Amino acid sequence: MLAMMLLADLFSAIQSQDLPQVRELLRKDPSLAAARDEKGTSAVSAAFTVQRAEGFLPRYENPILDALLALHPPLNPLETCMAGDVKPLLANEFARTVFKNGWTPLHAAAFGGNVTAARLLLDAGADLNARAKNQFDNTPLQVAMLTRSHAVAMLLLSRGANVNALQAEGVTALHEAAQSGDVEMIRALLAAGADPRISAKQFGTARDLALKAKHEEAARLLAP
Image (cartoon, rainbow, N blue to C red; front, side):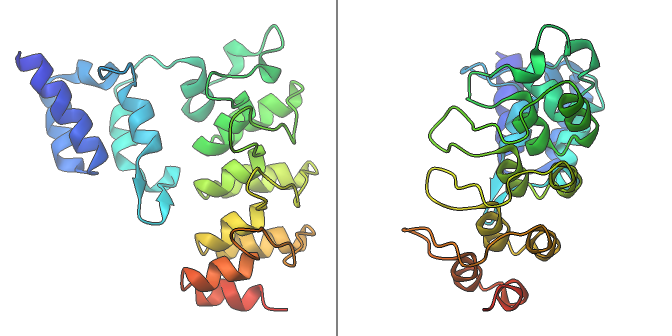
């Protein structure tokens, strides 16, 4: 019963981003770093996918994830792409596999900001512009925008990623960057040829999204 309570407390603390509580729970029971909830979701995956008002937490702003990873919990292949060493996985066309959530390993590395993994995956033949096999139909570059994974995004751009690819809702990487007010990536995407005139039926242009979210500098950069 106590173990179940600690487990529930851990996942609750992860979702509420209560770092002191997470640290205290891990101090009491370090094995919790490898725990899974009743749906089979690991604590690591829960920490990776927690959201705040403006979207997913960037990897560099996720101290709870750091606390979990510091205890070296076992990682599944998707989690390894997000936060671990992919070298042992690269045999047998791993770079071109697809996970249950529809992502390729490169999508996972992009989401996790794991630039070392992303580089190894690309060198091993990963499809730079692979489409997620899910309802979003997005590319690794677009996924990198979700967590402000700048290093991965810049790597993908340097390898020639399609900067104007449209995902299922008709938005581009530039739309994603504009929505979060990511000025650094807006500049980089524009320099790489991103077209600010592209308009999604439901969301309008990237500038429309920046204005709606009150990101004034982003909107200025995207002005005609």
